[in-house]
Length: 122
Ligand SMILES: [Zn+2]
Ligand SMILES: [Zn+2]
Image (cartoon, rainbow, N blue to C red; front, top):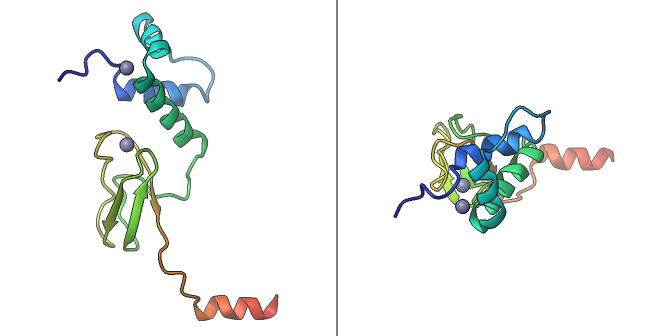
C-alpha cells in the first residue's frame, strides 16, 4: 500500500493556500496532470481550499490547548472526538502533521442567566 502515486497531502495543502495569494506555488507537471485525473486528490485539495477559504479564525487548531471540554469535530474529515479541557487538539487521523481546525459540537443549549437577561432588554 504505497501512496507514492498520489500527490502528497501537504502539497495539495500548499496549493490551496497559494491559490488565495498571488502565484508563487506551482505543482510539478506530473502533479498537475495527476490532479486532473485523480478524484481522491481533487477531493482532498477541495477540502483544503474550503478549510482555508472559510478561514475559521475562531476555531481552535490542532496543537492548541482546548479551553473548554466538549465534543469536537474536525473540519477536514468530520471526525468527532471528545476533548477535555487542558488537552491539546490533535492532528486529524487522516491528515497527520497538517493543519486542521476543530469545531465544537454544541449538544446542550442550556440558556444561561446572562443570556436571559440580555433577552429582557431586547
Ligand atoms: Zn491522487
Ligand atoms: Zn482530515
